[in-house]
Length: 142
Image (cartoon, rainbow, N blue to C red; front, side, top):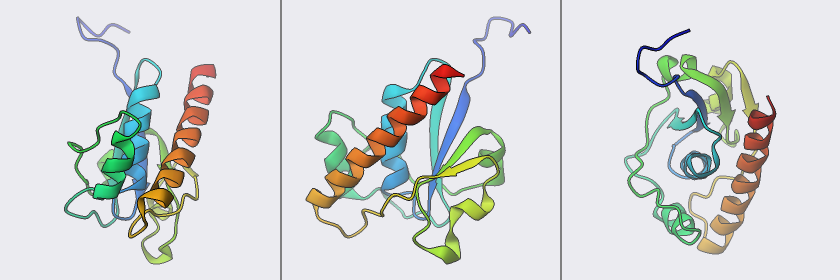
């Protein structure tokens, strides 16, 4: 297939949580750093907040990743359809669990950093980094 001067389209991995303010934004930042060539991250939420959790932004800056320019986005059918894989960060809020909307998905079961001190957010960040690295390894081997 020729793309007439355009590069091959990227495959998206969609990271989803309820507010799109912490976990999914952290995952988007890590995936952008570690993604194999041809892959791109997107994140969204079923009930996005106006801004990213500032403690999540701080925790990511500590590891050299700036997510301060990322913005919470609403989960849409278009985002789901445009994604190769959908990753639910965890369903702590069963009434608005993003997994019920996703087709090809994984649920990582990551704790929500909302309202938590920086020490706990760092632990959550580190768990997300491990999961993203594992995901990248599986994508590279396919």
